[in-house]
Amino acid sequence: MSMSSRLVRLVADVLELPVDQVDAQTGPATTAAWVSLRHLQIVAAVEDAYRISLTPREIRTVRSVADLRTLLAQRGVPE
Image (cartoon, rainbow, N blue to C red; front, side, top):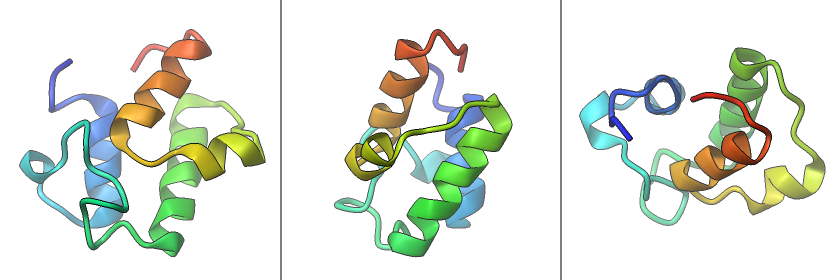
């Protein structure tokens, strides 16, 4: 998938990072900017942008951009 995807741009915006610093592995374990507050902001932004509602379990299990892509794909939501 293109690294300039809508999801990558959304995560980069929330984390206040350049788009080229965000990839599939970007998450709290790899990116200092992805702290708990930003995690909730990313979840809220994804829910708003894609018009979905993530379950508490899904919110807890998201650990990267790749995880967000997987959730969107499971719901049949185009990235």
